[in-house]
Every structure is written in structure tokens, then in C-alpha cells.
Image (tube, rainbow, N blue to C red; front, top):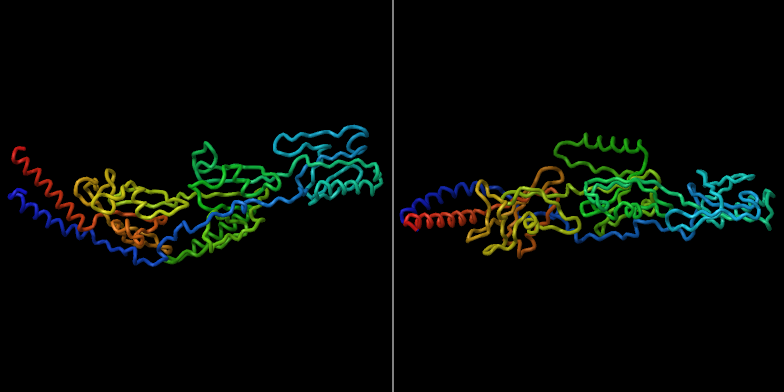
Length: 423
């Protein structure tokens, strides 16, 4: 170093140290001293729900109900003597061809036939319905038991119209916008959550929450629930925890993944859909974390089904792990440090290793958590799991600032000295 420049170098360095000490005065709690309630539980502890719990178990024999359309042939009543019964071929599905004339099952579960009182077929199989109709005609002495030719087949199964609203992007192939809705008609014994999802794109995507909501009830039920939530929110006192919103009987929550001690308790009847029900899949766009400091200021999505620790979060934000001479390489290129650019990862300069995680508290406010990224590579206790809403601020320690400033001044002085010698 040039003799004339040595006093200037040390003067600048000594004048800069108080500023560096002031800038590093933010107090944070080391991660190994944080209580467990402020730390995230690993998502790898969760288990996938059995897909079979999303569908209903069909009965061994199809049971008739309101909305079914039967094909009925009764010689000399619905069809002339000696004439072949009409044949109906279904346009879609795997249903077998039906014989006879179309007769719908009415709202009260009965079928209206000529010359006799309505016959109740609710909950009966096709064979039992045939016997009931035969008995009604023979008891009325319209037909003789020995000569009564009666055929009862299923012409069209009853259907349930439900609405599926998916807020995740790409619920169906070719759909890229966030938020899709579709109305589907589900045949009997396929009117469940699994078939509704299958008709609209499958299980929730990676940008959807790990849960499905089934919304039932009338318009008045929705108004009542909105009024209840509004009353709870308006009565919340400052600096107090928000009260838990009670479950509503018209809303069924079906988790896709869960912790072992939180076994879902919904029943088979809960996932069976009726006409007017709404299947709602919310988005997880609020499950994000933020970066700042020497990291580029941005927001990033947290993975849904696996854990993301602070080392992975730095890499996800654009950093490189494992810089020469230190544990963690900071962000190069896009990052900046105060008013003067970020660590470039070249030469002998030290990258920033002090990470401050600002974590939101349930009752408001934030707690700063200190993570040493150099230690995080070898010490699992330093690998804090990232939670939704966290803000990660990466910065230099005081020693790194002083070291980098000294290196920079030495390099500048060396080049300045060479320039003064005409090189």
C-alpha cells in the first residue's frame, strides 16, 4: 500500500465503524432460544387422506328414488298384446339398454300407471319394483297373476346438479386464469366429492389449499353466517386475539392432508352431494413469504406439501448456497446492500450471513428471529422453517462489513497506486 494513502485509508475505516455499529443495532432473538410455539411444525409429519374417503360406497343393487326414469312395459296396459316393447339405447354412460315406455319416479317416490293408484317404488330394486307393480294390477283384478307380462327397467338414472368453484389456477387442462367455476350433473351413487373433482380437473392443485369445502344450506343460511362473522370481527378488542369462528352445520371441511392427531371426523353422508350444493376449493395465494435486505425485494410462494427452511428460502429467492470461504453465498446481481450493490460472490469478499426473520404473531405484532446462515449448513437447529407471512431480511454482520470495507479499500489503494506509477 502506498505510504501516502495509508493514513487516508485508516481514517475512512475508523469513521465508518460507528455507522456500521448503528446499522447493526437491530435486536433479534436467536433461533435456538425461540419457544416452540413460535416455530413451524414440519409438514412432513402430515399424512395424505385416503382417496376412498372422498367417495360413497354404492349399494350392491341400485335403489330407486325420485328423479329416476323407468322403462315399463305392461301387456294390454302399456303396450299392445303380442307387440314387442320399445327399446331405448342410452346416448352416453355405461348404462344398459332399457325396455318399455318412459315413466318417471315422482317427488313422493311413486310411479303413476294407468287404471291403478300410484305405486311406491322408493328405495326398491328393479326386481322389487316389478313385483310391486305386478301385485297392484293383480290385486285390482286388472291382470291375472298367471298371464301378467310386466317389464321394469332403468331408462335414466337420477342426477344431482352441483357447482364446483376452484380458485387455483389450471383446474382444467388449458385453463390458466385463477378461479374457475363449473356446474356438473352427477348420476346417483356418483354424487360425491371425488366424482365432482374428477369432472372438474382432479384433486386440488399445488396452488390450492390442502382442504375442500362443501357449502350447503339456503340463501338465508349464508346471510346468517355472514352476520355472525361480521359481529365477531366488529366486537374484537384492540391488541386481543381474534375469537375462533364457530363451525357452521351447513359447511363441511374436508382436509386433504392432516397431522396424525387431527384425524378428520367427517362421515360418508358429509361427502355425498345433493342438488344445490357447492364444492369450493380455496386458493393458497396468501401462503407467501417476503425477502429484503441484500436479497431482492419480492414475494415467494411457500411449497404446499413439503417444508422450506431458511437456507432453501435464500436459494429460492435467487441466492447460491456454499460460497467459498463461508457457509452461505448471498444474492448476487439483483440484490443490494443499502445504497451500494450486493455481494458479487467474487474475490475475497465475505457474503452476508445474518438473517433476520420477522414472524407475525397470532395476536398482532412481530417477533424478530436471528439465524446464522453460516451455522445453518451444519447445525439443524438454525434451519428455521419458513411460515406464511414471514419477512426474510439478509444482511452483513459487523465483522463482514468491516472485512469487506478493508478489502475494498486495499484493492482501491492498490489500483490507485499502480495508476500513479503509470501502469
